[in-house]
Image 1 (cartoon, rainbow, N blue to C red):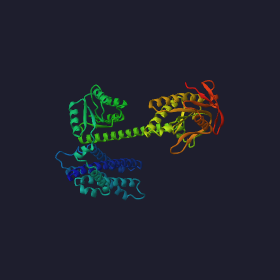
Image 2: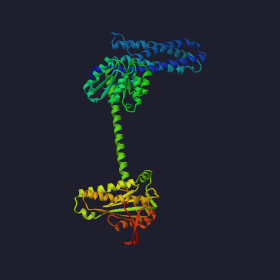
Image 3: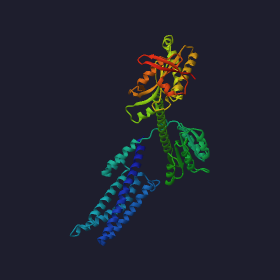
Image 4: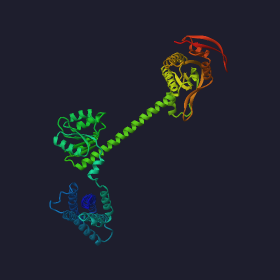
Length: 532
């Protein structure tokens, strides 16, 4: 930025800053004078009222002039008037009423010195009034000195630090060169909605230069049709349009779920506060008034798009988190029963249940250990995956809990983790289709493999063990006996214990195998469950 441009911006900024600095003490002078006049009447100092009223008129004149400056900083500058001449005239017009206030307050204070007796009740307020007037004079002198920026801080005195802060802030806000500003703006799809063809053309040409893809619409209806079919990053929306106003379009955009996320900048000739507030409340990202300042337009578009990109990135991040959570949830539910997962999430540190009665199933692939020595690792894994995936599906279908696989053996249980009155029936219904699945897969893979199954019913302990690779498992003599039932069963047969036979009653076809000696258990009566 050139020194000349910076000096001009600095001069304008400091002038605006000091106008605001003048307004507050100018109003304070008027308020203080009102109180002094009231007190003068209260204390019956009638002789002071004439001078006080003159001071009051001067303060009103000062405030009217200051208010005019704040509303329009360039209104009183003449066409051929230099900045230096304008500031000198400004100083004169502001100081004239102030000099009157200072002069009358000094005269009244001098009169008070000639009074005898106690301190005058208005002396303190008049002193404050004079100090306020002195402060205003210093600020006005600083304004005049802004035509010569190097003198401003010196004239302003105690306010020099504030002026330095203004100057530092202004230098920090240095605009990017045009090429760098364009690079900073990512290319986006922008919909321009305006019933005026010239306005659409100007906006389109300007935004295309900045690297954006532009689509235009002449009516609110066509704009809504476009956003229903295409994707946009931003909408520039004219407020005053026939048939459907920009405000109506805005309301519909924000009411629809698929378009509510699109930022909208309203553009209008209306600069009334009520219109701005209504549009912002309705969901507009920003509000710009015509004629558009191209630099301000670019800045507002960039800011709106950056907010959208941040929101989009946040949504993607949240979506990714939700997907990761869902994957973790699925993985956890593949390891543990849903009710156990819920208990762990509720803070249960130790999960151990004593179950009065459940039914356990073991299924082993007869001869697979010997056969696997002849197979490749890939074929072994493929075969076991097909078998156990089929078992998993059947277990879920019958409401049975898979416990684990042990080599080429499969273990399942019913009646846990929630009690099931028909736990033995569930297992008995599951076992035959498991044998059928093994036969079908063995035939399809041309592997000579058969399954044998053992089932037993009784009390068990169930719970979660481990803190890293944790598992839901079952323990107890019932588990050991079910394992023995499988070991002493025959290929292609389902052997059940007398306890399971009693639990099943007459609901399934069973044939008595007789008493067999089971290692560690002695003689036990067993039965074969017939296939379906």
